[in-house]
Image (cartoon, rainbow, N blue to C red):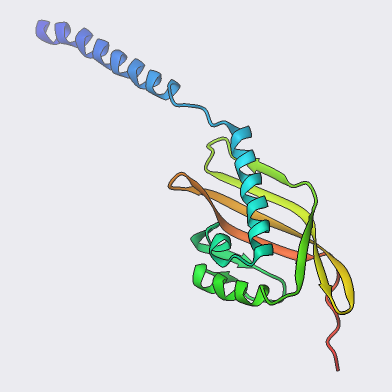
Length: 167
């Protein structure tokens, strides 16, 4: 019994020491620089829109996670980069020539591994009928994968109602 009483304080001391060490390890984790991550998202989005104007397929696809989901008006969900590539092939056929960007809102989680980015813009189309600006908006959900921000979901829509079907 005396041995047990002598060992018990040692056990408590060790538990306390290891408990303090664990608390110190947690306290030493670097905080996420939210402002820097928000700026990184803004830069990625800006570069993405520029890549679309250049019709640079590989630059556009580099923004997506392998299992990303694209939601566009009038179509079922488009899942994965192969399907997104096919959607971009059709999108690049449109005669758009510019984007008129509005300020975007970016939110980064405290953990720094999830973010969303949304805003309005106008797609500028110039064709034989002249210049048209199509007011639109989108939401991009970003996730940090292997240290890089990747789009996991993007959805967008026009602000104008769809045209009635032609007869």
